[in-house]
Amino acid sequence: MKSYKNIGLVLNALLFSSVANAQSAVVLYNERVTEVDQTLPDATELWVKPEDLTRINDFVLKPQGACLDELCIPVLQDRDSDMFVTRSNQGWFNVTGLADKLQQAYMTDYGDGVWSFGTMPLERQSFFNAGEAPDFELPDRDGNIVRLSDFRGKKVLLLTWASW
Picture 1 (cartoon, rainbow, N blue to C red):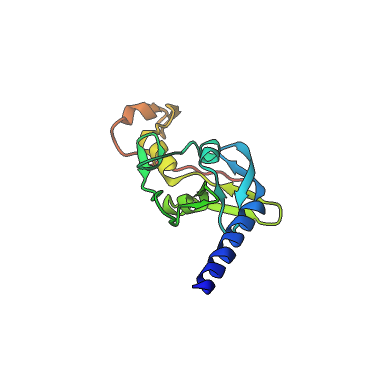
Picture 2 (cartoon, rainbow, N blue to C red; picture 1 turned 45 degrees about the vertical axis):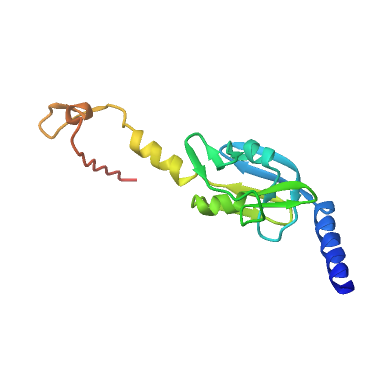
């Protein structure tokens, strides 16, 4: 029984020391720079407090998960999981785990504590679905003016060429 108490004390000391050694980070995303005062030390993942998640990428941690508008990624919060852990009564959210689930690219400079996140594929998809090319006009080979809007609702293949 005594050895179990010792193991418990060692585990508590490790958990406390990992929070005590928390470090700062700088996160780059969507043309914004977010300074995070305290992260959970981890060799390969970025763990932040839930309120910092919102500052980083506008996701909000709700009971149903990490949500951005109508999109919610389920996150277990009643026990430690790959996306959420509790250390010394403080919850920590795994930003890189969320990025992996969203297939969002990211890079880091571990030495300087800088994390850079690319555009979420969901954002790119909504742009392409809603994107509309600006109207323009050009003469065809016979000199007749042709407008892109003349082909609205049809598939158009534009070929361009430059000599430089």
